[in-house]
Length: 263
Image 1: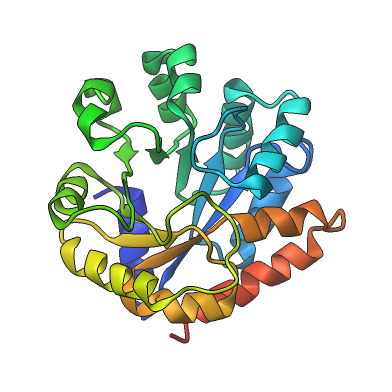
Image 2: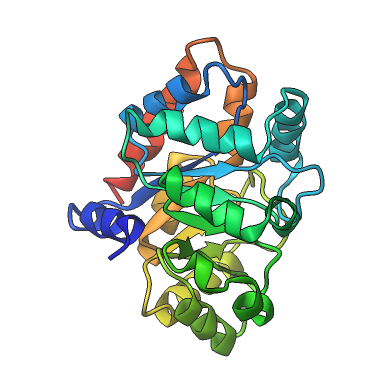
């Protein structure tokens, strides 16, 4: 069993939902990133999703794109990201997922990318612009030791969701809304009905919900329809306005984790 799946199961067995926190590699600074991750874990994060800064990201909204711009100006790239994760691994065993577009991986070289993932003990990858139809061609044998996490969307058919569940490992990433990442003011009943539908179809994997989740209220609303939640833009937005000790962001993570325990 993969460490990601094992972690989600262990959290669920405590009658909690897993909390995955998204961070942009090297944001807000390279120097304090490892310290930030350790504090985020201590505050309650169960899994970490690290976004690789990329200038033409497909699925990310303005908040995360802005953090990518800052990170790129700080010269964060794939090698820097692996170096940060390697440094983090000296102090933490938290399951780590890298989120990237396909172009940086192809430019780096798929074999070299996987080699670095394994050396840095990366557990899984999310590449949103590799659709189900290109899965077998892109993910050759080199990727066998890493979880490949695929995404469902509100427009995915039942047949497609089942196929995504079959191909995925670690968990299935259920995108809550149509569009890019970013905080949503509210979710209509259509969103909740789709989450309920998707959760009923996903059988092989655990399912986490992402896109738009920013508050304890959101987590309580979505918890009946998932095994975990992913929070990204709200964290990145908080970091962009936080102090040097990440005080407000740490408190936000604690609040989000508490919500996963009381659904």
